[in-house]
Amino acid sequence: MKDTLQYLFKGETLTKDEAKQLLLEVGKGRHSEAEFASFLTVFKMRPIVSQELAGFRDAMIELSLKTDLSEYNAIDVVGTGGDGKNTFNISTLSAIIIAGAGVNVAKHGNYAASSTSGSSNVLEYLGYKFSNDINKLKSDLEKGNFCFLHAPLFHPAMKNIAPVRRALKFPTFFNILGPMINPSSPKYQLLGVNNTQNFNHYKNVYDYSDVKFAIVNSLDGYDEVSLTADTHFASNKIETNLSPLDFGMEQIKPEKLFGGDSIEKAASIFLSILEGKGTNEQNNAVIANAALGLNVYYPDKELLECVEIAKESLLSKSALEKLKAIVE
Image (cartoon, rainbow, N blue to C red; front, top):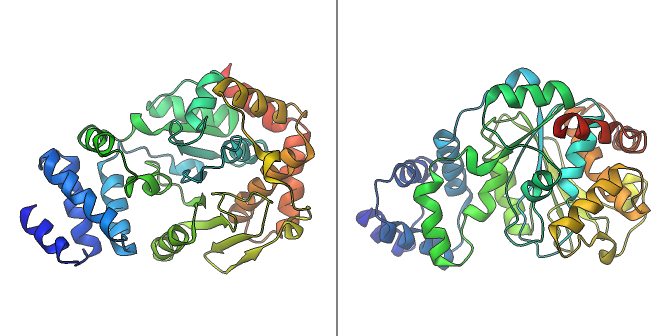
C-alpha cells in the first residue's frame, strides 16, 4: 500500500485491474485503517476516473455474498442518493410497480444516508423481513415478483471498510458504488445518479458491461426521473434528454415530491400511493420511473406503452397486492 499511495500522491491513476486488486486486499483486511484512510483521501483530492470505479465495483461484487437469482431474470431499480432533495421513496415504489406488472425485481438498497427514509427504512417499517437466505429471496420473488437485498447482509467486507468511512466523515467513492454492486448481478438495471460527473462515470462503466441498462439524472439534480425538469438519459442504445412530455406528462413543482420528515411519514406516503390515494404528481413520478424500467426490460415497447403498463399496475392495485404478498 505504501508504494501505491506514493504513486497516487503524484497524481497518477490506477488501471481497472489495479483498483480491483487493491480494494480486494482492503476488503480482506490486509491493510491498516490509516493506510485505507489515506487511500480514500486521494479521491477527495482528485476526481476518481471511470476505470478505477469499474475496478472498485468488480472488487465489491467479488467480495459480496454470492446470490444467484439468474433464473428469475430480474431487474434492479436503484439510485445513488445524495441529491439532498428528500423526496419520497420513488425508486422503491417504482420497483413495486414494475413487480405489479409481472416483472421480477431484485432490488438492492440500504438505510438512508442523506434523506429521511431510504429503501431499507421504508420496507422495514412496512414489515418486510431482511434476509440473505436464498430460499427466502426466491420465495419472495415467487409470491410477489419482488425481493429486497439489504446491503449490510450481503457485503461482509464492509466490516473492514465502514469504520474508516465513518471516521472520515466526508463522502467517498463508496457513496456512488452502491447501485453498481447488487450481489445478484441482475442483467437489467435502471440506475439513478445525482450529477453529470457520476452520470458519465456510470455510462463509461456500463458501456463495457453485459447489463441492459438505463441511467438517469434529472437536470436539476435528482437521482431519478423527477418530472421537475428534463432528464439526462442513457441506455445501451442512446443518450438523450427526456422531457416530461416524452412520458405524456406535465412538469411538476419540486415541493410535490417531498418525502416527509420522518420514516413514519415516508411510509404513509408510500402506502397511500399504492392504495390509490396519491396525488397526480406523486403518481406520475413513480409511473415515469417504472415505465423507464419496463422499457429497459422490454426494449421493443415504446416508452408511452410502458407508461400505460406502469399506470395499470398502480391504479389496478396490482402493485399493492405484490407488496402485501411479501410483507404478510
